[in-house]
Length: 177
Ligand code: ZN
Image (cartoon, rainbow, N blue to C red):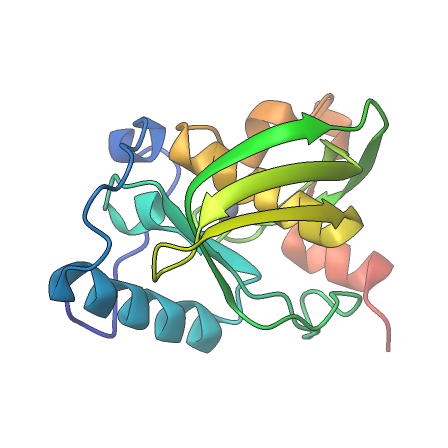
């Protein structure tokens, strides 16, 4: 697993639909070096996040690394966050729709309803128990990546095919100059 380039599973690959298993041995050099590689990879790709499942590693870990770029100009800046064995403890009834994309579904955007605020717990890469509250875009990333650990992709949550758009068309209509 210690490589800096991964193949991202594309929609249609059955492994994208697997349920990932909880991680018990965080301290192994193997796992820690996988995290380093995945972190570098998602930064290089300009992704807002990535789940291990997307690179065919069916373990419950994902990375959130929101930062503004041309594909997500309104993304808030956050330090890359490694999320292991995540759980949503509470979610607001209020849901909001916003556009999502995914490295496993390149070229497609969908309008996806997500809980606006969530309270979560997970482990850091050193095994520290973290509790956090996320809202809006970061809450959206968390829910999107957690879905990957359960074999769900954002298209599953789009309510109407009218709310699917090709990336190129989205850029024309919504991207800021
Ligand atoms: Zn995704």
